[in-house]
Amino acid sequence: MNRPAPDPAPVSVLFVCLGNICRSPLAEGVFRHRVEQAELTAFFRIDSAGTGGWHVGDPPDPRSSATAASRGVSLDGQRARRVDPEDFGRFDWIVAMDRANLRDLERLRGRIAGAAAELVLLRDFDPEPGDGEVPDPYYGGPDGFDRVFDLVDRSTAALLAHLDPTR
Image (cartoon, rainbow, N blue to C red; front, side):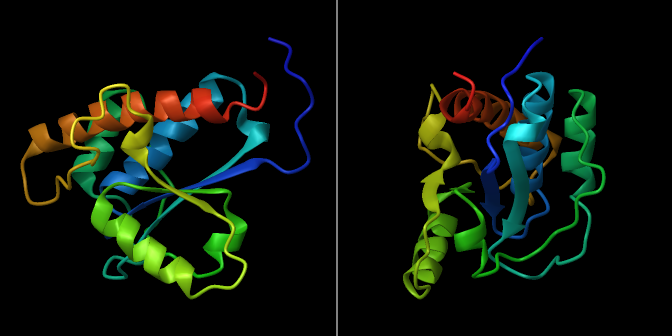
């Protein structure tokens, strides 16, 4: 497939949840997988982070990794990190998993001069937005991770269609 040459400045996307071990690593992995399948890797810079710092340096929750792997998506190499104030200048899009994290991000952005990142909820792009949030599956069973994968998968497909620089 022939793609036009990438713009020198790729679109940068940061996915954010609370601890950066369940939802946002899954969103990062699924979005990265979609970007790779579409042969758009040169057009994007993708990462994830948490609003809290409890899990900094940890890999994704094994249940997120197992759910992703069962659907052909790898979360290998990811490590939890906390949102950094510089992220608001480094990323074009900061995509929150729920309203509580979106509020935390908005508060943080309000204290940063020149913060240009667009803040949105992931499910703003979901064709079936429901309550607009990606629920935290941390305290539940495997079925919660399956449900989160489905929401993330559908929403990242629409996000990629929205951001695709080749269209």
